Length: 296
Image 1 (cartoon, rainbow, N blue to C red):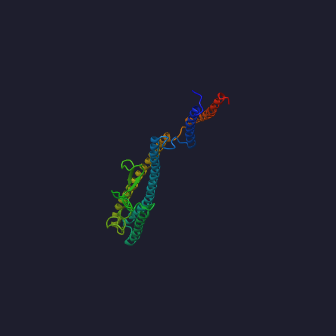
Image 2 (cartoon, rainbow, N blue to C red):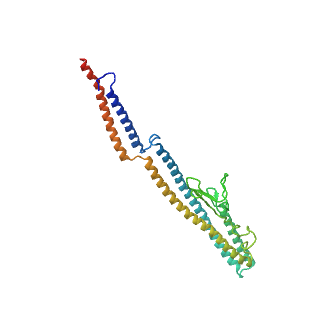
Image 3 (spheres, rainbow, N blue to C red):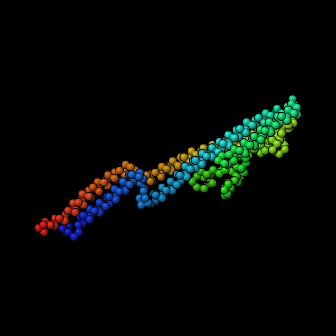
């Protein structure tokens, strides 16, 4: 290489090497300080796109866990009210059994019937008053076969959404709760006349025994369905948590930095920067050799 003074090619080469090493050192510093391998789209455009989609799904799955747990709480609220109704139905059967025997006169049966009707009214009150977050559970609002969520207030069975998409087979299912009012159970004077309407006569009391028994079976069917749904939701929660955990691990492998590997790169780039700075200083002093030839 000729000794020239208009262009310091060695200094230019050293400066280019310094710029490259300094840029790599900057990337390593950013990754180590943030803990992320991908800090911008330039780091890994495809990886960033995949990572962001995974983050969205992870967030949705975690919310799905909360949705399913809220549904479990709703079911437990309904089941607790049905347990109280169960106690009242048992008392109503006891009253019907009492009124069915011939050792009581008509006046006494009327007194027994007044408690029977009071129990029926309380069952209806509990069924109408039991709600979760403003959603009435036992008055029949969640009964039926068709769900319609197009309006401000959804109607029909309660739709529990827990998946990140809207696939009926994977992301949601419905909770159907039948009515537990006394009239829907066929008991009390608010229901249609028939067995279970009253126990003011011996014959009516005897017929009420069958009606109350059928009401208990109907109530038990509601509780059994709720229990089965709660078990299903608990399994759903466990699956969602495992899915979110595994997806988080996959996302981490894409976006998070391997500190050990990146620290190795950092030290290497740091040494290269220091070396390039030293060589640039040497290259900048080389043109002074020309002064010796000029007698300087």
